[in-house]
Length: 168
Image (cartoon, rainbow, N blue to C red; front, side, top):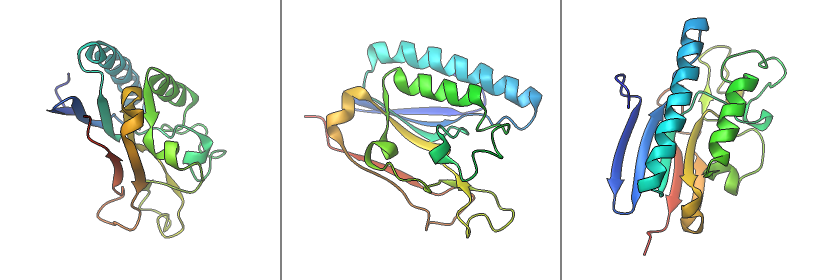
């Protein structure tokens, strides 16, 4: 779907698993690119769902969906990753037939998957939840668990996990 390797897909029986990396919007050119990519991705997924309804789209969306997903929603309201337009896109994407697997199991605040390397952000848990395992509504009954593993410190992100039962 793209030339930057931002979307990789592997099929496992009746389920297709994707690894996604949405562009960040660090400046106006990159923000325009991000919005174009998001629109193209939505079209791609809408078409793909016609032939492969069981999708798990994992990865770095570079967007905090709700205020609960960011440590300081007020001061970050005009920062890419928490812009109203980005959040609206993610909300619409989820409403197009996906489940935010982590929020399906956990409604509590202060769970993040990314922290800046600046200002001791990780140790102070001043992070953003920008990594998601979005699961097709058709797999709702198979969902078993979804967790964030902040204790794994190999980069500025931490692993996120979703577990599902096999489709029989």
